[in-house]
Length: 266
Ligand SMILES: NC(=O)C1=CN([C@@H]2O[C@H](COP(=O)(O)OP(=O)(O)OC[C@H]3O[C@@H](n4cnc5c(N)ncnc54)[C@H](O)[C@@H]3O)[C@@H](O)[C@H]2O)C=CC1
Ligand SMILES: O=C(O)C1=N[C@H](C(=O)O)C[C@H](O)C1
Image 1 (cartoon, rainbow, N blue to C red):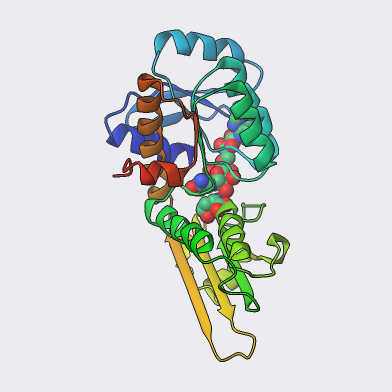
Image 2 (cartoon, rainbow, N blue to C red):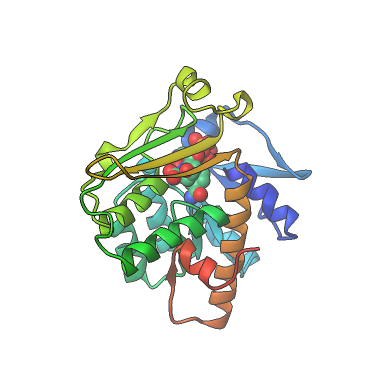
């Protein structure tokens, strides 16, 4: 995602900071990272603090973008809080309530969301609205949720968890631990019908609802191949956040439904 966002930022005409934070293993591998002809320097956890202070001086409108891993999500949030750098975070996992509470307590500008793709965010917003408007409308129904992602994704989809939250509001008795995770290549190609060239980057979600007597069924599905939809949405979020900072907006913590409702997604 880091590369896809950097490329989308360049496409949008943004000034890309020539550094990229990464884990210690990536620094040790010492791989060159080039985006749109610009060389990016890899910066590991040991040297990032001093660098961030320098970069802040040089780029006063800095917005940091986080696509790291569930294991380090709180460490990364603490980093942005420590340096007071506005940030957009698409990383999933961690304790989401704690994450929001920490950022709110720090009074820092941020967009945090498990889903950045405009049309999927719109679907997510629609489900939230349905749950708020018609609470319990699907009481007694059963729910089956299946999500397939690239096998490197270890956690349950943050998007699926958010949608399940709305289904719970609609009366479904369903826990996120019941979400079926598909990470096996053969199942992805066969049962899930994921195109082979999307095995390393896809998100196929299906939500099936069945009435108590089996006579009524609903199915919602969103299938994404590749990373572009999230990268473009991330750039929208960064532009939106930069505007909120400049205007000194009183609300500081946002999710992508807020960004979409503000009309800030291209
Ligand atoms: N919100 C959204 O729309 C989307 C969210 N995601 C989420 O974003 C996260 C990352 O996904 P991918 O890019 O596919 O994973 P990836 O495994 O390709 O990349 C993770 C990156 O985190 C970096 N990293 C690890 N430890 C670090 C540390 N201590 N400091 C700085 N960087 C560190 C690694 O160097 C690596 O480049 C996952 O949680 C995924 O579910 C992914 C796509 C869309
Ligand atoms: O890791 C991914 O790929 C994705 N992660 C997010 C999630 O966990 O919901 C968003 C999308 O599904 C892609």
